[in-house]
Amino acid sequence: MTKLIYGLCDMQSFYASCEVASREEFAAQRKEFDDSSDPALVVAGDPARRSGIILAATPTAKKFGVSNAMRLGEALRLYPRLLVVRPHMEFYLQVSVRIQEVMRQLFPLQEQFSVDEGFFAFPYPSHLFSDPIAVARKLQQRIWDQFRIRSRIGLAPNKWMAKMSNAQAKKTPGGIVWWHEEEIPTLLHALPVEEMWGLKKRAEILKTEFNAQTIGDVAKIPIGHLRARFGVWGEVISRWSHGEDHSHINPNSYGAPHKGFSHRTTLPRDFYTRHEVAVVILELLDEVCYRLRRAHQSGRRVGLGITYEKLSGGFWRMRTLPQHTNTPEELYPELLRLLDQHWDGVTGVRAVSVGVDQLQFTEALQLSFFVDIPKRKGLYETVDQIHERFGETSLIRAVSLTKAGQLRDRSEKIGGHYA
Image 1 (cartoon, rainbow, N blue to C red):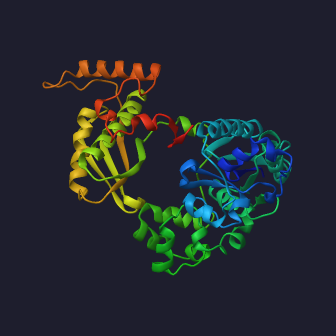
Image 2 (image 1 turned 60 degrees about the vertical axis):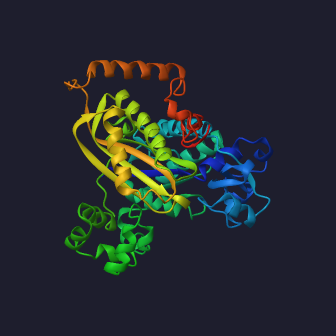
């Protein structure tokens, strides 16, 4: 009987691998199955100032104790000869697009999962895919030959299991693992509950409240108990613990309608005044509203996220409006109310995020006795056209020129880092 085999292909230390692969001085010495042939290189925020955090590190750097999200200064103390490069996000995105295209050429049923991961599926047994391991190796080889980037591939009966087997492939020589359906009780249930992908903090709850040390222990918990503790997530956890996942490959996942829009920025220093934080909120809201208008959508619920100094603690709160909108005039006052209600005004603010959801498509205008809605709509259409033609800093609010403004600096970055 022919069934689908699902795979997840993950690039090793993607940002760092892109940097190493693009540098001639390392090309001759690098080998596909020898991680030690890479230099001790990390991609970090600001090498000139020896500041920021590690975004990616080669396996060689990790052998010296360097890890992702570690502060650069700490990494350099562990290994002073570390090669540090600033991120080049535009380059990484270009490589990502090309790798995803290679995956689609081999597997038409393919779905991008992140910048460095992609799901795929193929029928087995079949004439085209007679040997799953050989097929996975073909993809792995193409990625190495064309991009000099190592990849790991997990194969399994469904997407979630493919993610789990991919985690094991990272620890396996050759970087390819195939989990058969009948192997689930042996391979999956023996793993610690912390390795159950997608749980995050729920794994600790399962350990402390249910005494579940392994995924097999979770599978023994009655689904009713999990549902009572985690709500709908309890059913998902139960299915996963039995190796079940009913989700399918969606080749158009990146083109699916948005459920919400959000934008976040980490500040270069701690902000302590309401005015400074309010400027950043307005800048982020302008970006979110622009994306709403471009998608011909409007939202009814607005959210504000504040992360405190040292990137520790904070809050995320939301308010629901009586009507849908995509203009800052209606959303900004609600965000300021959230700020005043939930921020003590004393603790430093290091990151701010703004989001709008509960969306609908804007097929008609909601008129008002007090506001010239058509005039406002025309204004923002003109502003959006100027931004699209000349860039987002071609027309900015005056407050963005103050010391609190972050727009001009953020406009030079992709994903929060310089392109």
